[in-house]
Image: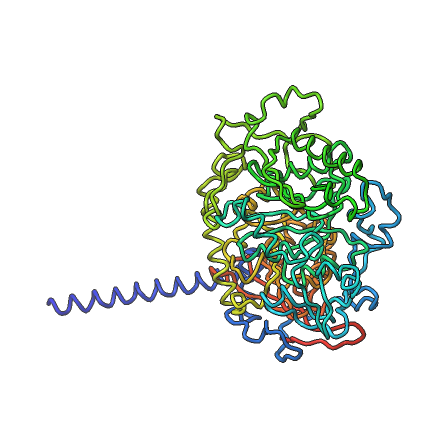
Length: 616
């Protein structure tokens, strides 16, 4: 009897199991049909991408530097993409917002004609900027600091004009950079040794620096081995290609000038500012230029002035200026420095160093000084804003020993320490916890990027740009002496985030990606664009941004896009007409996440030919 009872129970259980399995099959069939119907947009697109691409591997995409390649096409649409032709060969060094012809139509007072003047929509170029004939990949760092292939920047004028100052020398098919400068013909290294004897450079207190009128950026180049990251700038002027030389050497630099508009950096950004015979009239315009340096200089930071008028009594004849003129100039600089609450730190030879005091309590009576006009606002809305002859106020402190705005850790501890603007709660929408979560997220992303492109850690990519830097998590996670990152904060994002980037010991700049960046063509090895096209949706045309990326990316340079899949599909289609090879990769958390990664490589081709390589 017992045996018969068990047999019946088993039959019942088997029937129930069959019903359950059948029900589950029907459910998942209907779920799959719904995903493909378009109602679940993110999931349906993700499934389609997974079907049409091999998202687990990009072995066919080559990141090596070479002039040949092979592979297969991976188009996601049968519709034909727009093909962008090459610009004329005369545009090889085109800088849209610092175009020489356009510059000459603007006033020369206050260097207005050397500032950014971008072309209107009707004058924009919709073609690909060619590399010069013979272009080759730059030398790897640190060799690139001292040597640049002549074919990449074929301009010899500086080798003649600055011959006695050891800026640059032409030797065979390369330029050699001995490390000299107008004020340090014996080399930047010895000059920095002198500065480091009085400025706390070796211990990591000084990490970020601003070099105004940088020449070929030898000062910034030799600071790198001391773990100091300099933002160097110089105008595009008669010293042809000086910023281009700097970037070709693997040194951070942008085209820029102290003119009539504010510098594109946040307040209290730099630990040190530097002028080595930079020809900036510091005493002019009621001290406006020194006041702008004061705005971007951190409390406790240093200003170094090397060259005229310092030590004028000894050098007035060599400088071909009168004693009276130079004496008056130095007196004016000293007066402005005093009004700014800068203390004369030291003076030796032709170099003087001031230190900005740490808070307003260190400047008793300044508020009552009739010659001091305090700026009304302290915000970092500086993009195309007129420079003012006013003094930036210090943040408030609780006692006389407190550093206004918060004291920073020495570098490299500074990189992951909680920045004062985060810990104080002054950056709205961010807490200590969300900041730390952002750091962990970017460490995770970088780990995936290194699996996708195994050359990220090798020195293959020296000059890297993050087009939408946020809190600097990408740059912090990828940090290495083999590379540096230009952190760009779009002007339509939260501007306070760039201040956090500087408090981490990183460098960056404000920029509107509807316009061209302040650099020469072919100056970045790798570009990271996370959320850029979603951010700029309906702000400007996608091709404007992509063509600018193509202009500043080196031949055989790489791009990592991270965005929503529908956005990346449009990007992928457009760059297929720009001589780029690309591959779509799943999000690290799986194929059903709508956010994807698109990796691309710019093919090698030069002026006068259609010689493209690096196919997928």
